[in-house]
Image 1: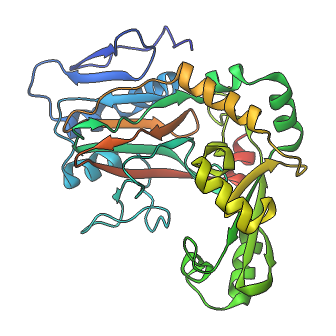
Image 2 (image 1 turned 120 degrees about the horizontal axis):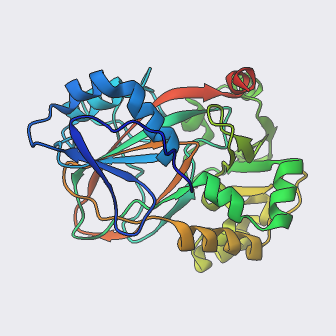
Length: 334
């Protein structure tokens, strides 16, 4: 990944890279008395250029793990923060700050760009460390530009030709119900919601509902024009489930009835070997760092995919998102 050589220095702070990495850019106080919120007011335009170049910026030593300070920073660094985001639990006392994804401590949340399977997605995402775990718990990141360049040619060609289709089956008693997900008990309201969001909707027997959406996986970044791999394959493909869990779900529901799945847009399967190849790219090219209390990681969600590693001990990471992009808006920019 090549960074812009003509970026003006960021005044009042010192910058560095984590050992032997190309990103994220680490930003720390040069004198120990920088008010980061005032600094951001004065340097936002320049910071935006750095974000587009590096994809991820790690602010360290500014005590940004407190909810109020975190929300204030994210609000200043975005045009508009996103509220009522259904996929994450809200932090108490705020409409724009969330807890990180509730998922078993001993399991990995694999690499993904937030909401990349949906009609709209945040272009900026913020993570702040309230409490680092005793062991593990890193938030690995990979550059989506590099990811695109590393894709196997056959996989890339199919993505460019057909896109990806994400499939979700709502099965009574398993995971969240469609009533809770759509916040209605009326099938007509669900159908209207799906129509508005470009989702295919199919009512199945025994109270089941299947929704699916085909989206582009290879995009041009709307501001830089660079090719990126923008996806959630690893959150949907059954290859990434524990083997026992995968076998049980396949036996109960079959491939078509899995709670989540992803195929190419022509509905041909993504093989386990192809899924493994994607994971290999991430493992070989991702950046992992240990959280320090008060750290804030700011990413361009289209340029950076993130994950979460297993951990031991208490861990608390805050999340905020801003500057929503929609398919229609993206097309207008392009």
